[in-house]
Image (cartoon, rainbow, N blue to C red; front, side):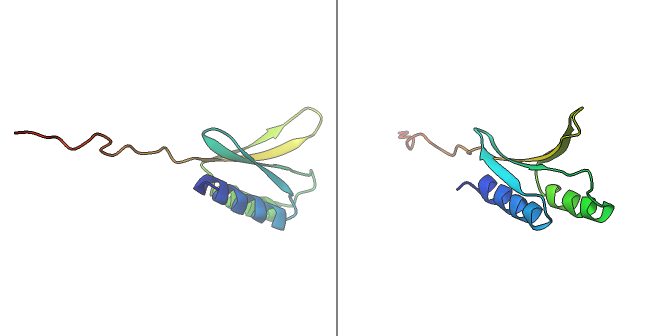
Length: 92
């Protein structure tokens, strides 16, 4: 599992630990975490949830007109660095 997946899994586990069962999905350039947020979430739990998702690269809350609220977080996958991929130079 890439490092982004490990970080996302840790975020999901912590969200589940505070009562927000979360799902993790792998994407091409990032790993996402989503959890449904009940209307009855207390201010103390909101603070804890925000501390958890602050570990992600990006996070937000999607609210619909049907009172559905989905918390999301994204952890970017590392961009591979390219070193010296060519063969050694043979200068004379």
